[in-house]
Image (cartoon, rainbow, N blue to C red; front, side, top):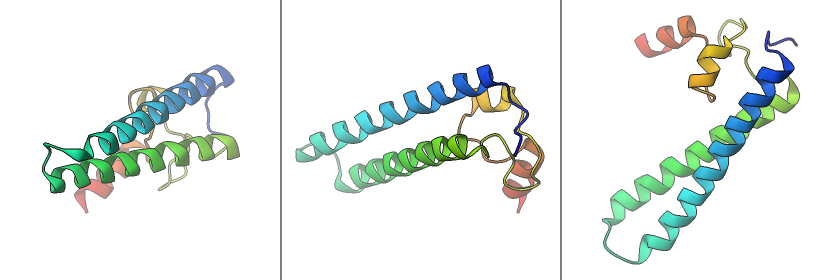
Length: 104
């Protein structure tokens, strides 16, 4: 499967995903450490759930990168442009399919 991305672009995006994953894992650890006071329990649980979700998305992105499907739209199968992935490394859809999904 070809993604239309060069090896240099893929390396840049891999580094972005890995950095995002490290940041989210650290964020989750900080949230869990701060669970002993101050913050409303609902807010804390929502923040933990959001961090967990972001970690899962980053890992899925790295898995797609390893298997060769990263950068391929999950809707139409077209290549997602590097410019979109650079801004949003976790993007799973091209802009056309993303707009369709948001409109539904």
